[in-house]
Image (cartoon, rainbow, N blue to C red; front, side):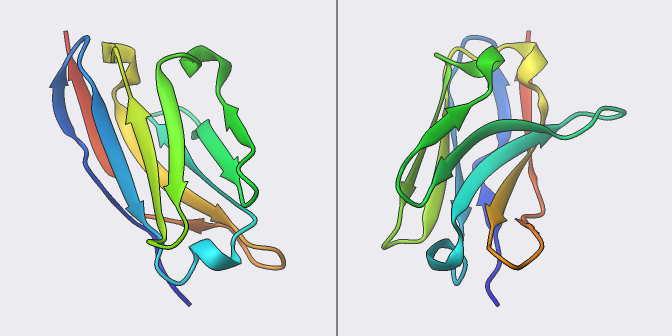
Length: 116
């Protein structure tokens, strides 16, 4: 079945950089798209970035230029690279995989906290 496991979250000062990883063992090869979402309390989960199997990338307009997504198909790992972080980027970041004919797969989330 496979699962998504995020890592790399933590505390970071404003202006800093952080990279998240998502181990997508058993899923990456079956997904037509994988990506990252984030959520803060009392708000809906929002798309951060998505990459298709062919490598087409979509990034939330508000994060364009600061966030980048990449994947390593052989290693079945998805990455989110975040630069020039601001306190408003504080959220739980979730890995997502979309598989045709199945419900979306989600990781358990990793907390990113950006200090002023």
